Image 1 (spheres, one colour):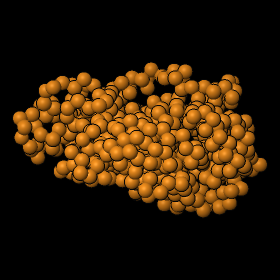
Image 2 (cartoon, rainbow, N blue to C red):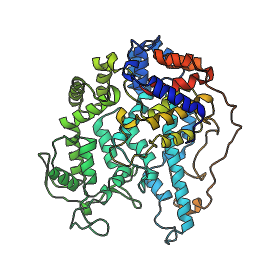
Image 3 (cartoon, rainbow, N blue to C red):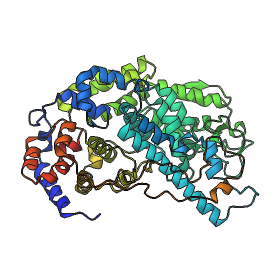
Image 4 (spheres, rainbow, N blue to C red):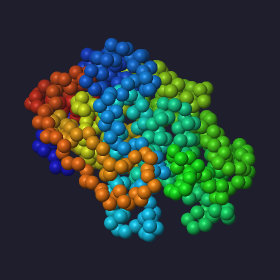
Length: 537
């Protein structure tokens, strides 16, 4: 990345001049906070940071009411402008069976293998589907007033991570988030767990679609043996945790329980909405003992029983509670808080809304020692910076590029543990330089977030949820290019530093205020967005 001289100046000023002694910069005693610190705290933790007017809104309605409102996202109206933008992203409404039939046909309609040109068209259409998923996520994160829902989508997607770079998942991750994550982000954990377990994106990513009982009637071709990948990650990452008390034998048994769980490209799936398909011919129907529980041999109900056991486990309750406390409070969360959340999880049968409410009402959440101590991930930083500007985004490509440069491309985590949210992963000099480069460009008004009008990213006008029976390749042959600029870009308009400071609630330390005061005014907004205080939440 080529950095302008001003960026190097800001990097040196903030990284080497202000950043030493960070631990002392963020205490209420040294930070200038004319706004009630509780308001800033709740906006920075339950949302991706304030937009213009948010501080005043929370001050008027009260912190408690704001929390209650965010815990009930369906009660919060979505702006018509956002609804309109999302409605143009047609692939959001496609089911996995429709996506697979339109974008991943194994053969052409005439039964012949796909030609190189046909495969090229498929790759382009798959790219567009991926663009729509990214567009939807960033539009919602920056503009939706249902901020806690967006925060929890970020949390749960990383908890149940699926890597878009693996084969079919490049066209399935958007549907995965839309069907398996978003509807259950503040619901019951068992429902969330079940939705991810049944989704083709997860079944493909962790190879369970190939998981087959050896010697079963369906064991042939690529379906010849037991695959433990999903079973292992289901316990280690999704539920019990690495210290959850399970054995290798439990992994093997769970893999047997999930034999036959997969999805279909063609033919009627078990679930027409997701494409989930259970193949009894590849299932191990023997009786089993899993985590000390006897499970009678049968069919798909064995997997449901195993998910019930895992969701109700005290180890799962603690694992989920620890991760939530780490995400919302501190990288090393207080043990008493984790204990309290664990009890709440168990007493409410995994009601995530109740667990979150207990977290936000806990004394630990409100202890000032935990204010502004969480270092923002690149995703949190980029989204919070855009929100602070109040810009209505119509072009997410600059944000997509920035996340790529910062090492956190959306849906791009290769490993099943997802992106981490702790400081040790993201804080380093190179990352700071890149963040400040982004802050400088954004503050100068040169980031073209409104360069193109909202538009559908589909490559054919007939892309609908009810896919026709006609050959998808007939449509693909008339692929249209992504539209160019549809209106004259707005004139470059630097951010108003005074307005930005008011939006953020003036959270800056004395050292940062001094840096702002002693540098040219045109650098003020960039200094705010690149400050240590803004890097934290």
